[in-house]
Length: 453
Image (cartoon, rainbow, N blue to C red; front, side):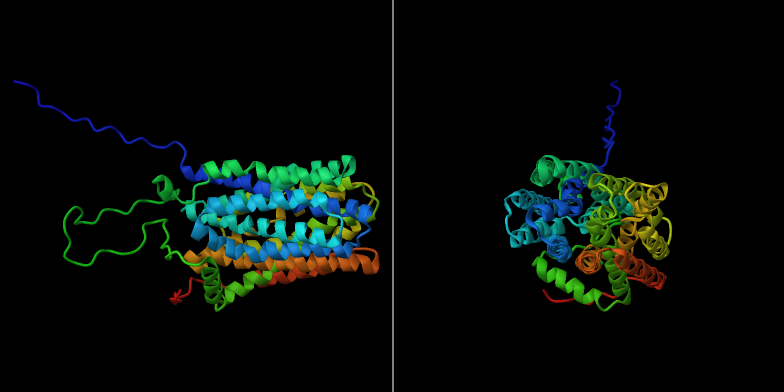
């Protein structure tokens, strides 16, 4: 008598690394490549003034155009990523950044720097803005979103850290044109990685978002059901709207969000965040240090240290956001930043003093630590619209940065120093802290009102 046959079911092959982490790694590199220009204006401003005789206000205007487009492109980029995919939008954005930076070497007139620094790089960096980090986190991760947004946001700081010392050195010898070519090459070098490894969604590789659980089978699984089928997303998944025109989608989300008080609180706070980072420190710290006799390479090195500690601070902020009330975190971050700006005019000198090192470390830890809690509030309140809402909030960030970049340049031309700009920024940070603390604890996603396409 033969022994009964037994069927051995092979154990399912478990992935050691979820594909979401591969996507996050490539997204990090893309943000590093896109970040090269973020540090460039502060380093290249003095060489361009020396060669062409352009005023600080003219160059600040180019940066302001860049920052405005950087911000206003973001919500539409988020919608474009939903419509055409993360990979295609990211690749085009990196090409625009590379082209704009490379073409800068051909400029001879001030309007041309407005075109390259302003239009091309503004559109490219806007499509690679912090909303990109939020989109990756919301699409690929069901848990640890705050940590992931913190890591990806730190990619911009890493780009500043990697590029800034080289840009400063090249700007002095052999010259600013070689520095511009380095930035362009850095952006273009990431494009092949994006095309190969940056997948649009977990469905493309047949997995759920990281941390998501598959829907439990119903009691009648495998049998016909006479009643209505259950509805609703599986854990960790979002209900996706039908694909539609990206501009319409972005504007519809803005219409819905504008009716919610929390949206305007985030807009006001993030506008001040942009004014006190990209607009003021990012654009004018090196020229201001140069006014006090500090060599440009030394000042650039200090900003690189800001970038280094920003990586630590932003990742830590993401970890904290997963565990603590994000509105309280925002209030603390803004107030600490304001204190730093208040004392900065007393710290600037021809040499680097220990007090300046303390400022750089603290400001670095706080640089974009505001991003994870802001993105978390957007998701908590606006649900599936959260990424696009964050795009609009980020637009306010860049409008604030543009206004500060231009205003600080005008203050420098009018008074010969930046002191009043630093004090005004410190006061604004206190306002942002109060606004952030006032966001209601019980804010929840508003009732959805269908808006026809």
